[in-house]
Length: 512
Image (tube, rainbow, N blue to C red):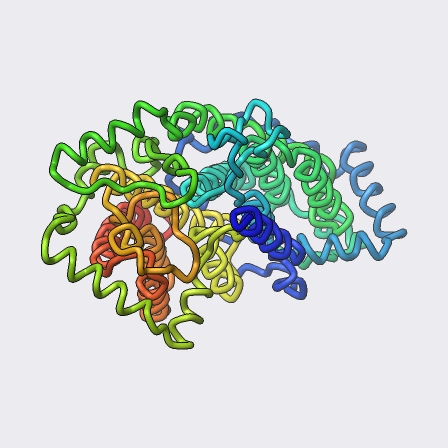
């Protein structure tokens, strides 16, 4: 009965988390007015594409052609009969397509961040991408899945917008309101050419990526695409032909990333009973106590082979090189002291410690630790008035680092297969549940310090604040009784090392 109540509570928490959209916090943002249009972005270094013109975009019709005049008349028709709903859509999307799609992603992560409940025989079902509507729903957007999903979407958006900027420079067709003064600029004015439409490029590439990642949400994702594209036309930001060219380009580039995603080993990350048993056997052969699930019945370890997923920044050799030295032997006095320290910390938590634990928990029904750092980054990026392509570039750097941090972290966790404090001392009762994977190193610490140091490179004036937040996130896992201090210390070091790969890329990508 206790387990059923716990499961019901988890579902209720997740449902309440999704009642309020992430974008409600940014509902009143003004139209995006970039301080710098980044007109040279068409030459920035790409992630997967070999060159920005990998997919041809046909030359647009002349602005004095009958086809273009028809496009202008469509805009004027919408603007003559603007409904309140359309005005709301224009306001929503004019704040920035990269921001809005990132918010939509975070909402979906929270919605799908629900671990499956056990079968009657005590086994656990695995979400199936081929049948996403069967229980358990696909995906279970746990932290590794989320980190990978944010990275794929952000990197695809970046490559798509670099290609978009390239073609804008090639064709240099002005926005509709600059061609015809009777067309109103309801989403703000820009000197950026409108062909192909950057908003439509974003809609095309993001929708295709998100349909792969959240196959049960195809209808809602398509509706979002339709809303964004119609708002682009009705606002006077783009013509129908600007939008059509942009969406086609975005979809083509998405296919490159989708093909990579299908072959990056993520589909094998669940592993098998043989794999799970082998972790125990290898750990015991080293005379160490292996980690085991503290749930009843024991739940299979979460994505034990995720450490073999192909990252964007670090190759497999780099992932191995990132491994820190081992944690203390499970039979050592050092481990006994670390466990006692964990018990003493959790025994009488202060109100401030409990606040920190809850703020950084990022568990079931939330957008996960990588999503938390996307939220932090987005709040700061909004203040910087970045162009869409720079928004995409910065989030791509952040999220590629988060994905590779997840790969490295899971590689380390299952390499050492170290038990958590709660396993070593049953007196330790955590404040936020017990994650279903080994202890060393701390994922929160790795995600947070990788993110904080990447963001510090992008916004050096905020470096101190990001470091303080990352340290608080790491401390939250100690205060909660989930980790030993050494887990978080090692996580900090490795997370900062992962960051180096992202920063090294940033220094040569042409955007600085």
